[in-house]
Length: 289
Figure 1 (cartoon, rainbow, N blue to C red):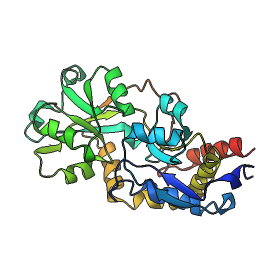
Figure 2: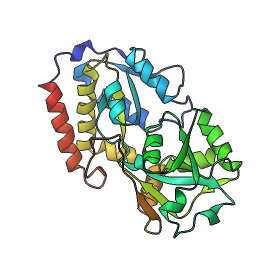
Figure 3: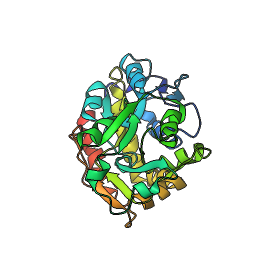
Figure 4: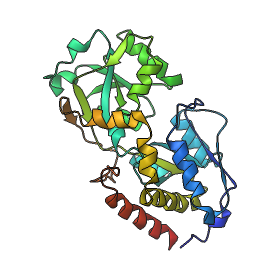
């Protein structure tokens, strides 16, 4: 069934983004464009980026006032009140698997047998508008919020200069980050992993609710025909992230996420797609009826 509002969709679907560089959104933009291609019954639309890169807080405002249609980012209960969530973990929950970027000479500060209590005495940094900041602070970690900067340069500089002890990055982003900052004296910490429920969703402008059904329809079709798995596994950084997330040598600290009510028991859809297929079908039916 097609939503009765389907044909009111915009001919140009604008997505917002944090960076203009092609290395950002390499996967998300391809999935988004393919979703639109696979759902022509909702209308012919072209997917284009917003011309101005911006931090997440400003992206939310752009969607709220209708200047953008879609963004992606880590979800939280608050964000799901601000925008319309498309509840599907694009990165399979790997956004909640966090390793540390540290000063390359400070690995000895993070032994394999370090206690969580010791870690609570260290100082970390996160983006001041990232949902992860509240998660880490809620679990007793000393983590300061830092304002947005291009490719997080200020955060990497803080690590290099010893202003903070660590910068938690999710296992998908960390390798790209380190490559971009390979001139700095920073490195991947070797022993620890933080883990908590965290999912990257597409979010839709409240002014364009008809797009939500289309997004669920396209995601379901991509999962059913195998394209979504193909898109995900096309990127070496995704494969590397899965290995890092399941590394048996790392000590794992499981954290609570107080800001997220809706969680998934089996978000790893490349391993077993059926639970998420069922979820997508249910979400589609709720909106198409």
